[in-house]
Length: 249
Ligand code: NAD
Image (tube, rainbow, N blue to C red; front, side, top):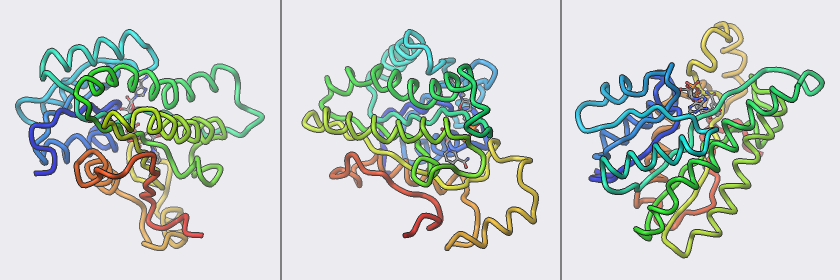
């Protein structure tokens, strides 16, 4: 098992069709004790219970620093250590540049970018004490190609910011045994995409992807397990594309 007795935190992990929950499931299957963090309305306790015994579901808002700190403290109380963090919480909004209002900008950047900073700040002291840890940040192909299918420019900016933040943290904490990497998913079928794509549009999009299909949540989860595990012991500051080849250039 790749994560035997490791403790992993996954933000935004309660949606059972989402990338976070798929990652939680795979990490639990690899022997990790998992803490799922999410907003109250997403019911993280129920999601954690679906993983089986010995996991934790915590209400936490990643845009709120005290909430992130309280969640990290609760994980330490329950499990005694934090080996991995997956910064997965994110929201999107499909609007053009001229439509982005200040509140839209704040909402979208706060969850992906501020949330990645606050949650990383909350776990780094424990990882530093352990002189070991792995943080995986979920960015997006939208950061690399200037827009995906659903996200607006502020979403691309938030996810590009995540790439820069992760690389800078990777430089800062590498000497202390803490690795920080990003995953850039392409178009993955989750609740974010649900109901927004008809079969015809899906066929059109699939025809532009070398692997000829949309992604599945488990495709991204596998990449997160790899980066959190010792298989990735010499990887830090990397961006792992999980997009079926849509960005080959
Ligand atoms: P999702 O909507 O299923 O998951 C997002 C989760 O984040 C939800 O459970 C939501 O409750 C939670 N969340 C929102 N605001 C939060 C906050 N303030 N604090 C804590 N949790 C919060 O969507 P998903 O498709 O599984 O997306 C997961 C991540 O992957 C997101 O960061 C998304 O931007 C990114 N992503 C998704 C795709 C895709 O095609 N689905 C592609 C690239 C990147």
